Image (cartoon, rainbow, N blue to C red):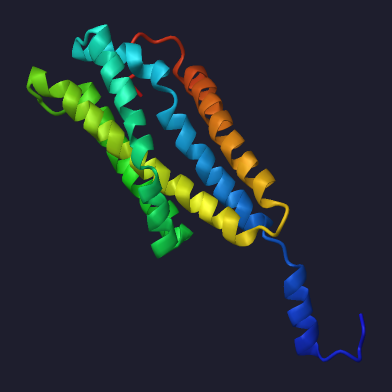
Length: 188
């Protein structure tokens, strides 16, 4: 502590020392949430097949339709660039919650759909839900890129991507532990 430096200057110097750990940690935790619901189709795919009387081919179509969003995953990144990472993470989280709840309602049969529309509607809702999860991930990577200093961005992005996969595994284990071995994985 040097008393010769004015207090305002000391405060400015102290702010330079502040880290971005809180922003990065929050962003990485947000990215972890996206993996649990989207990468764990195997947990509820069998129950979906049974409850909606789907063939294996129809189930495979629903499962793989989600990943088509990868071809336009740059669009959520543009939203994060234009409106900022907080907006992207918040909007993505809200919309994905809404869409995944709608997906669950459709899977449980709370909405009557003609048999010919079940696969296209579940595929479309799943695809758009994946896009909203990409909004969260886009906001996370925008946070990492804008707050990490030189030489640390790669490790921060690697940690975030790793936590997405770990999040899916953690959610799968937690779900199975809480749910038990019930026949219908759609009841919770």
